[in-house]
Image 1 (cartoon, rainbow, N blue to C red):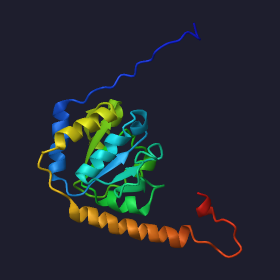
Image 2: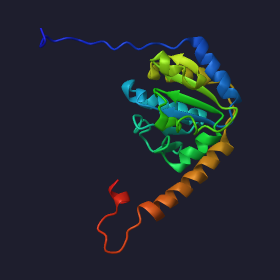
Image 3: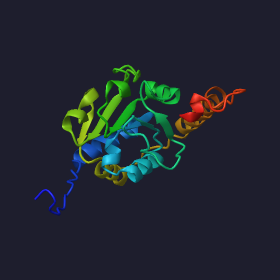
Image 4: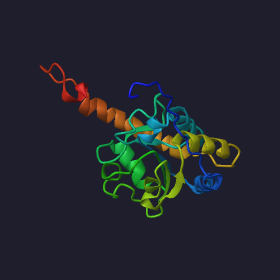
Length: 203
């Protein structure tokens, strides 16, 4: 029986519409939101929905170790690695974020800097996760659901919700990204004399 052919159906838990409305209400008042994308984005195959929400709502995205590659098309709002092993770019944005939407992440010590990265005293959290234990972390508004289904519900609900553009925030992110890319070029990817390849170039 071990070799019998079987079809495994993956259940996709739908979000509570009231929770989605609560998230939209938080987005309406947020000036500096941030999405933290974890491995659940990959498990749920929610790449398209994540990027669509990021672009439509002008929300930057940081990725945990497990979430690397969650943003796939070189979005201007993709910040790179989140947490203590992440980029200085994400650290700055995260430290000032007033709303953090956590998608499919366990919010480990690496991702949160042992709860030290998010410095804004008014910061609020949303936890989108199939596991209720993780959805409630950081005192988050829990959306216990499949990541793809929850992000799609948010996309549908935010359309026409009257959320104001964040053009100044997006411009600030663009400038910070340019500074970080220049730092990478100068300090990490620099070619040194008599060196075939640097450690930074290998990575």
